[in-house]
Length: 229
Ligand code: C5J
Image 1 (cartoon, rainbow, N blue to C red):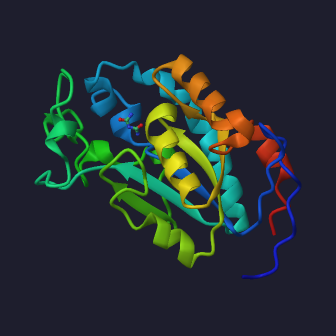
Image 2 (image 1 turned 90 degrees about the vertical axis):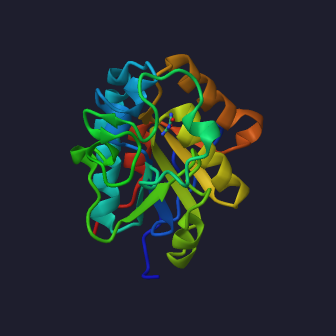
């Protein structure tokens, strides 16, 4: 690992977060057309997808900061195989959506790998060298090689962004916490279809001395980073 200048402590809740440069991955959860655009899975569940828009620009700012420093970036996509063998009936059959996982919609089959709607939105599209994890569950560690991908890169800390806060972001953060990663969620870079659930999630994460991890505003993260080379 090349020498990296130390970062300043990030002013976070419930206390300052120390980010080891080069060992901290940016993990962007499920910023997919299926959740953010009309006609996708999120809309089929009856949600107002416009509520997620505000997370895009802050996530772009984090992505630019990580790319400028050559630090590890991970993108995840909630997605299933064409034959849905990795989609349990309990997931597909739940509730009364207008369309179910695997059904054809205006952006192709919902939550199916390779379909147009399953892609990450163009504003945050992965570039060569970044890790892309297709995940069949809500947590990004379940049924994936994410832990191994982080281990080979020497990653010990995760900065998280993405959607939705209380579902895939929180589940991933809890999975990561149990695997020993120090995790920080960036407030403006995550969103929920339910603002009250986002607020509750941030409170849950930081309660009890940071039982799941840390939360910080975008500005506090960006201003604490060492200068880009
Ligand atoms: C959901 C996600 N909400 N990415 N997925 O079903 O949070």
